[in-house]
Image (cartoon, rainbow, N blue to C red):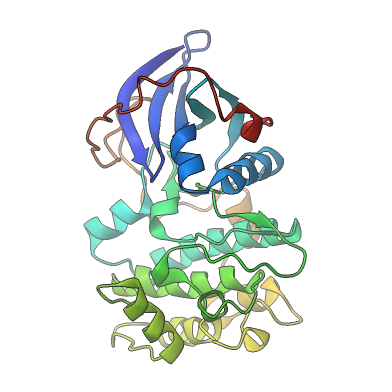
Length: 311
């Protein structure tokens, strides 16, 4: 196997590299996680869960995992290379998205969340940084580190501050409804160019989320505003997506009127942004990351193998 140097992603305890396999000349994204860091940051359960869930899901708008393996120091996840980069980068470049663009991305995400929920999986980390665009401009959800199979409720505090539902912050126990809350935040951020609740520190953000006041820029479409309010309902028993009609209540909302849901599934609906690229290993749509420094080169043996028996 031949690994290229470009990093196409970085996280707390790992990096994603562009890799090309010699036998088929295909480019892949190789996620490399340092075992020491995973253990130190108490993420063993999350990483094992990510591997397990990604191995079991197959959907047009979710990144494909091909295989996983490990050596003495690292865990490796071989994923499809999604050439268009993060939706986050495209959003920052545009400033904000139009109503039609936002509706397109939101609709594909609704289908992906609906699929995950039908398998009792909560995603829990919806944000523009975890949404990639494929070569045709369709969504691919990546990073399943916080995803969890849950039939009823779970209590772990995890996710990104701006996107956390009130019930996560209040440790009330949470379920699938947190993903619909996060969708409301995402739709607002795509339309406004910034999230509805922000502050310099996480606690300030939590206070604003719990206070629940949303200030809409005047250009936001009234139907979009109505949907966002129904998704950002603090009482999850009244939150759209979490009612008797489930995700159909969201798909049937007036803002989504005219959306060809089957066409989206078949990827026959043209995407608003078609990412530019010159060749299949082009990394031009990704941010440039500094090279990694190898601090633990002196480690001998593998003290953590028993923690990752499924890799």
